[in-house]
Length: 437
Image (tube, rainbow, N blue to C red; front, top):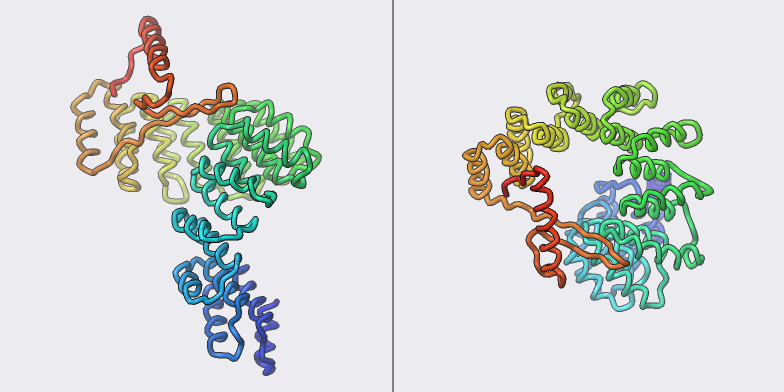
């Protein structure tokens, strides 16, 4: 509507001013139309409209939001005067692109940061799986006079979930939301539920979900997914039934949670029914992620041939998730031929994923095919593929402990390895045979 009025304005001979052009550039941002944005930029350069700070910021913002960071950087470099918004636009652009080091340089160069600047950098760290950095930056923000807003806390709860730091998340929620320093919202409640579920505290998630005065689609999806991931199949499916009676209409994410619940519960008939009903009942076209859930379900219960048939019948090209589910099932059920088939497909899709090589080597090792195990390892070395070391963390008495494979940096590592060896000896006495490294 605004762009149409602008077009009529030009046709009638009215010369737009800076305010008009900023509004037009904002409209280009909203619709993500780079071609139109370039045309507007060209008009500005040819017209008599003076390019002041607000106009240049609007131009940068348009290019950033349309994915042209290089042009935004050129404009930024030519600016004689910059304000907090100029620096924040560049910080946000590079953070969203995942170029966090560059984003941090813009952020650190900004003397007087505002809430948007802090949010951009914290969100960048959180979304790119750097939760420690996100929480460290949040602590720095708390030392300023600025108060976090909803978006800040959503990213903080996500970071707490990634680290398994439920204790920190609960304290932050209590301090800011319970004590009304930040206005409570459904979005914040959803983030808190998601954090509780991902940290394994299903009871806390359920209690919070039950007490919510208002719930949206994300609320229901988070709770169904939380149940499913932790193996509470019956609870997840019952909540889905309740959602159909009381809640919003399910979407494709809801059905991922439902199919995941069936997968963890080994419910093949129910899983097939839900996959079929997606289009029939909810008018939702199944996506590759839904098929991957069903393939995983069939594979887990040992129906590998049916899983392969489903892959062949997929209306889209099978992706890594589909073939990965079949490869993992082949390892579980020691099916070498099926595993090799899935591995070959995965190799064509992503030859640098170390996990696929390791799974195939494990399948061969189960069958004591040591020459083939050596062949896989040689292939990894030849292609420069290195196994990603396993990392886990656990929270004990409010403190997070991280463990990396073969890492001995923990102050109690000697005691930890001794107990681990004692447990391994007990398992071996009961008949456990460890897999070769």
